[in-house]
Image 1 (cartoon, rainbow, N blue to C red):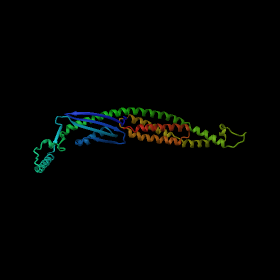
Image 2 (image 1 turned 90 degrees about the vertical axis):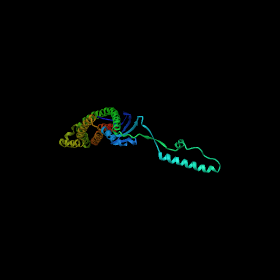
Image 3 (image 1 turned 135 degrees about the vertical axis):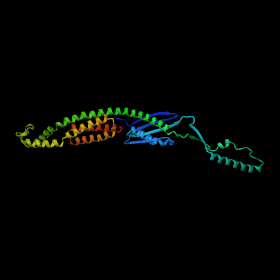
Image 4 (image 1 turned 180 degrees about the horizontal axis):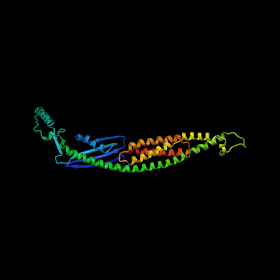
Length: 314
């Protein structure tokens, strides 16, 4: 089954006041490359999450962001920095005592006491603190279910995009197959074409007077038929593309099998495309006719369009 590597999905799951939100984006990549963004306090689950992803995806750049929230009444907690508060209080007491000594000379005294409000004016006396999550099993079940759900949605989208790609690729490979039939038909007529060309060239080289000139149709009386056949056979053998045609037919069959296979086929299709190009390059170098060359150039252009599509296949 052909799947696209470009997709987006999101999912959420809650389990006993623990909520997990997952967002996944996938892009083209030669290998499976996972970028996981997870709250630091839950980093112990990173390996498990990556294993879940690799069990369902085999290729692509995967960016996954996971948010975990404790929705229980005890989730919001604060932590008092006692040492900091004590140090701040002592600093305030020392300041008050010094100011009292200075004010005795002027007959003025600071009579106010140090209040809790003054202490709280110090920076970071009370900080918000995350509730420690000790129930690993509960948290992992919540995360795994959310990730599984997001991956299923991602796979569905990749599958839908893959169906469209597969349809386009099938149309293009059908076009290549039809064009190959034209090449095969043109190639079958090559020996006769070489024979006619050879006779025309020999006729042009024969010097006779106007009364003794031989027409091309009567040139066989001058040329040894056996030698002519040998030369035509040599030329035909040098330009024979029958083996390349057979291999391209085999590649077309394999191409369709990969498209219809349940296994990821992006790498195989990319390799097979190189083999197509190799065969068509050989045909082009052997081709002695403009008609054949034009067909092959057109097919190589079609292969380039297929190559662009394959880059997006898992």
